[in-house]
Structures are given as C-alpha cells and as structure tokens.
Length: 493
Image 1 (cartoon, rainbow, N blue to C red):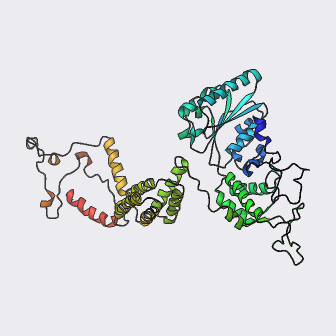
Image 2: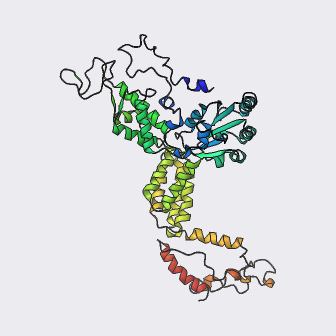
C-alpha cells in the first residue's frame, strides 16, 4: 500500500502526451506541465521529516515521530500516537512521511467510511504480518473523533499488544472525542497552527518546485500577503488558494501572437521573464488574481469542539472587559461559521446577569428581547438584534455582585449554615400554627413609617452576614447608598 500511495505524485499527467510525443509543441495549453493532476497540496506533501515546516517541538531527535519514521533507531519501539491539531497543520502529512519508513506496512482508514469490520480485518492481517514476516503495520486513522465508542474499543487489543502502531488524527479535543483506554495506550501529540513565515516558505517552495507550479508563475509580494491573510494558518488552504490564483493568472496570460502589457513598439517584452519553449513571459501572480480566485477568508470553527468553546469564551470575556469591537469580531466569527443564533442569545442573557446585573438592569431586558427577536425573524436578519445586544452589554457598567451573592449563599447552605427559620417568619395560615408560635411577633413592613421593619430575617447563625455587595458602577452606586440605609433599619443599627 505504501508504494501505490506515492507513485502518482511523480507520474506524468495522464491527460497530456508524454515527453517526446506531440505534446512538446509550441501550441500546448498555457500552464501545461507534465505532472500529476493531484491537487497542489497533495503534490507538495513532504516526503521526509526534514521537509516539514513547523511542528519542530515534535521533531526533535529521539521523538516518537522520529522513531515512527525510522529516522531514529534507538532501543525504544514505535508508540501509537494521536495527532491533535487544527486543519492544515500537517497531521496527514506526518502520517504519509511515517508511511515511508522501512519494514513498515502502511494502512490508511478513514473514520468517515470505515467500520468495526474494517478495523478487525486490519488487526488480523497485522498480527499475521508481525508473527510471520516480522513487519510492523502502521494504521493511519483519520478523523478518529467520528468513531463511536464501540469502534474505538475495537482498536484496543491491537494497540495494546502492538499488532499495529496507531497514528490517529483529529481536529477535536481527544479528551472529549477519544475513549480514555485508547488515550492511555497512546501518546497525545498536539500540533500548533503554522506560523505565517512557515506558510510563506511553503508558498515559495510550491511556486518553484517541479512538483508544484514549476516556476510557471511568479508570486508577487502583495499576492503572497493576501494568501497568508486568507489561509488562517492552514497550509492546505494556502496551497489550494495559490493553485486557484495561479489558474487565474495563467488564464490571462497573453497568447503567442499577442503583444503583452508592457511591450515596446517593436513588440519586445520589457523587464519580464521568459518561459523559453513558448517564447512568452512568465506571468506575475498579483493580488488582483488572488482576489478574483478567492472572495473570502476561511473561518476556522468547529461547532462541537475547541473552536466552539474558545470563540464563545473570548466573546463573553470581551463583553465583560467592555471591548465592544472585539465582541463584535467574535460575534461575526460565530455567525459566519453557522453557529446556532439561539446559543449566542442564551450566552448574552447569561452575561447580562452575570457580568452586568443591577449595574444596568436594562441589559437583561435587551438580551431577552434579542433572543425573542432571533426566534421571530431568524437569520440573517437576526444578526442585527444580536449586534444591538452585544453593543449594549459591552458598553454597559459592569457588576457581578448579584452573581457572587447567590454563589456565596449557596456555598454557606452546602456547608450546613442553614439554621431554623425564625418563628415569627414561619407560615401561620393553618390551624394550630399560632399555638406553635408561628408568626408571633411578626411586624408587617407596610405598617411602618418608611415601609421597612426592624426585625430579624435570617437564621440565627447568619445574622449580620452580607452576601450582596454592590459596586460603585452604574445604577449600583445608588443601590449601595440605599442598601446601607436599609440594612441599618432592618438590623436596628
């Protein structure tokens, strides 16, 4: 399987004649190259660990990946690994590099299509190969988070007894998507988003490399920056975007009989490279070409994984921190990624009470109204009341006094600080309650001059305890002054 996996990357393009045939003509299509029709991202996939950009924290001498790739032959055997990282950071690439290791049989399964039967078949064949041929089977399982618990259970015997060396890839947090027994038998390796300089190096390599664009275009600095802005740290996205933009540039390349832009009166091209065989200049891939091929940036967001939680966490913290611009950014990211607007509205309602509270009591009204509006009108119009609520909440005065008050009260109850209800506050409406002393001595607040009665309300052991401590922000400044007076009257000070 290892051989067939890579042979097509170097093969001539089956859609064009071989060298020496009628394809070596001046009228061959612009951008023609005798190479595989595989996508640029596949053609440019590294073949050795030293070709990989980024992830250097995982590629040190003696690392599990070095051992798996056969480039470090220490006493330790290969370990099963789980590769966790965002799309385009090299998980599949690392697996394909490992596949080239000597004395290895490489088997690739996708959790999208494979089932328990396929896994068990691989395990049986791997056991035979190990015992009869002394050959290690490397099983690459992509999208392992899509496997059910039963399917992941089927992997355990082979991984534990090293019938196979598992290389599993996932974009979701393995703590939530991979069963604990499998994690305990594997090493978890976290891949980091690629740095901008790493992806820039990949783009330059792809332009010049014979496996890539073979120098048939020149990449301008402005176009490179635009591609880097759009890819969001995703190498695959960057190379796919480069290929699309190169297609636009090549399609606008002047024909053999056309006078290209910048030609002099005699038709000679000024300050341009030449592609040799066709006598035509090498086109420069400009920002305009890239913008024509790609009209928007990729939004990295997984609605059930880390990005879901990370983005909404940043969203709420931006509101709490009164950064309305950052809050709008994260709102836009969630909307563009297709997040459920009802989820966003629920988070706004929570934020209105948790982070703003009585500093601006109208914030909760706005959040609830936004939630109702989203239910009534749906999306995309629902983005407008959501944005209004975000603007209100982010710019409102902040107080978590009510939030901390209830949490402190609950903590006291859980610690057992919940004495008997004072007799004068107990229910006295049923016959015989008076004989028990219920309601005796209760002072009706409305009968008092200020509508406030001086009497004990909490259990004995909580007398004098303050849970609600208003801040000096917004409306709570007035509440704090009023509360001081109320506590003085009620507690008889």
